[in-house]
Length: 623
Image 1: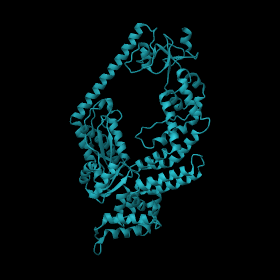
Image 2: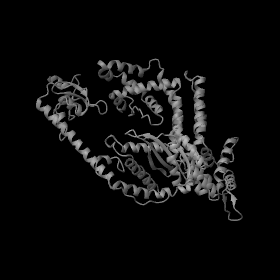
Image 3: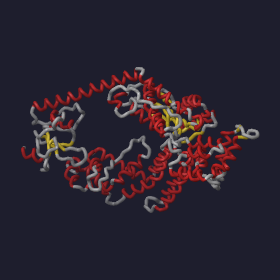
Image 4: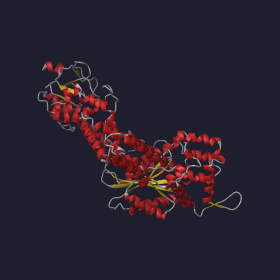
């Protein structure tokens, strides 16, 4: 037994729990010494994984202090299973370890109760409502800008932790995404009429003249709701969420026969690695041959572009995976015993001796990289994507056609290539394109040219119809002479803009166009500086170019919900939960507005008083 304690099962030199080689000195000042004094462990080989050997019985296993405690006591109070009991540990040692673990659990429970008491007192008292009123006052600076730039109403639905269907309503433009309110949809049929019913009061409260568009995902009920509301408010547009549409485009490509096989095999590889944590930690270790410190990803199903993210990361760590399955460490510790069959199957997948799957995976990532990059660009409220999405989608179509012409892999037959091109075209023409994209393209300073319309008669007609619908019957006072029709004023201003006449043709305006292209100048700022000769056209540009092309802000808002509505706080009522989300989400909006110095300065807003407790550690507001 003494030889076993000195060398471990494989004859390797060991270290004790203090990290000193072949020493029994315990951790000095470590509260876990009562556990670790009974063990030795080998030096770290992969990230955080430790391999322990019991000084009493010689059993070895991988894990943490909780697994060591269970080995000594056979106590499952920490939820650890699959660790055999030590039959040689002294009774007093077992009693000491068990008492230590029970005291730790009791301490945690007491702290949790204290945190919950503080939270209940906070949200049940006046603190939450005071915070909400402060946020409402601070948001006045942002809401006042909506009369000039307009705002987009975005909405989405999800089911919370208690199974209650909830709908959130966001007010979005380039100033940020403000959470307006949520609607508890339980016991309701989520039809278009029902959704229109809770969106209509928001439009009336803001004023229909201040609402530019509705932005929703591709749900048929939301499409129906927008259709009903646009009949009532004909000057409001419907903008399909570009992020959702591009995500669906990638899912459509992933359903093609050759791509579905790639996704299935990638899922099998990731599933094995998630079930065997030491494989993930080998890949994450930057010290192994070719190590990059990258994690193997398996994004949540609600995240956009999940298939591309997962497969592209496997391609990135391909060489590391191959090195792992042929290493001595694999043969010695992992491909043994009851784990050998699954390990051999995994090894066969990784080595891919017929060289079939990895080339397909690389092809899959090259094809989906194009729409994925566009999707990432649309997932923002700040960058004025309304002016550039049209051109990005045209470029995506051209780049996809060029890429498919170059690819020679046998799975990309002419039929498969045609199917991909048809998917891209169908999603753009059938699901995504809308009048605001066309208007935004024309008013984008980067595209300022008399040839912007070119032979595309459809774009010309879309712009004319848009102006006619929004400005029909409006008269604009003139400094000299009688008022003019607004449509005529915009037509004259557009002619000067495209022909580079007046303030649009100055050297500074042309120079600043390049700054807009480089991203150091916004389209809105360009129009503010160089559109002074044509205020009506400038106002139209501000209203269009500041709107989002995506409802992804709703998804980010759901992340705030998840951070607040945790397993330990799953009894929150819908109204209190909505108030907490309102405060937590909009505080960041106000802070960003203040820090960036946009528009009205809201003053130095201090953090509100918060109750003590670990539920506030990673948040600016109670979560």
